[in-house]
Length: 186
Image 1 (cartoon, rainbow, N blue to C red):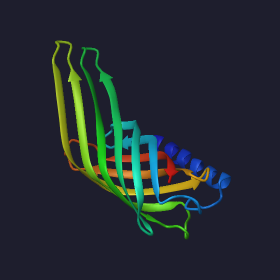
Image 2: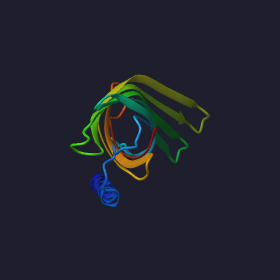
Image 3: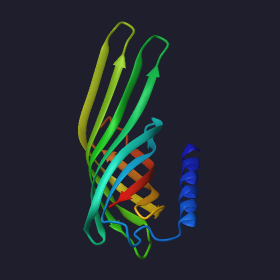
């Protein structure tokens, strides 16, 4: 139910930006490089639920129509406490490279590709007896992604991304993200 509601909200937001800003995202005047803060929601498998997601991307045109970029993505798990005084918290991070194919001018503003890099999962648990246990692991992560954005000024576009990340660590959850982006083109 939450996923359906989140998908609907994301679809309406993208439809709204396309009606308000009808020109193509790769319109004349936008540069070949962009820097983009990202914020959205991550849905983790294995019943881990919905969590906030934050990131940063720097990308540039490799060769028309390809964009190559570096990304960093952080997903805090939050904290869970039990009545007996035990609390557990953690986070998952992804960092690496992304390669996107720009479909402009056929579909202005739409890109599709993949992300690949490292995945880092860390958890901390505290007990009322004073014990602290930290666990972390690093592996590889990869997955497909879709991106769509629309211009809001001569140097900025606003849009969204859908990313699926599949980490190699056995205890790390797979991640489905819906992310809002604000790209500064230069």
